[in-house]
Length: 111
Image (cartoon, rainbow, N blue to C red; front, side):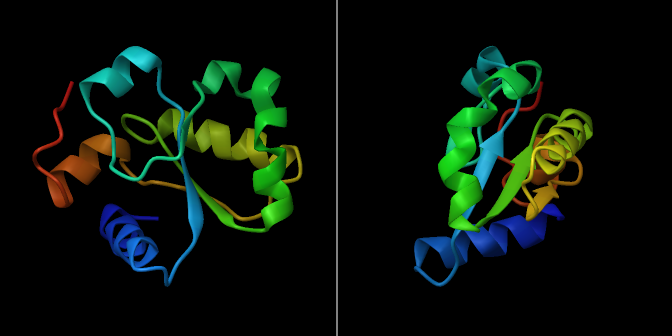
């Protein structure tokens, strides 16, 4: 998923015409620097296998999960972890929060 697609989906979610989960897999210190408005949960990618149970309700909901990190590499890894544990509707934000800042919201701090 590219940043503009995510922005459109976030806008649609605010109006009630779309519903999905937005998962941040960066570290807490990174989230303190900047975060995409509308993020539902932060689970650092290194903790994801041990904390996968926290997402059981997400799996049973059938909603899509969009995953992001700083540049897209960790979130791609997280998508693989989610898919290997039975999640089927999982999408990686291309370019992560850096590209999202470039293409959608330049007010987000880069680091």
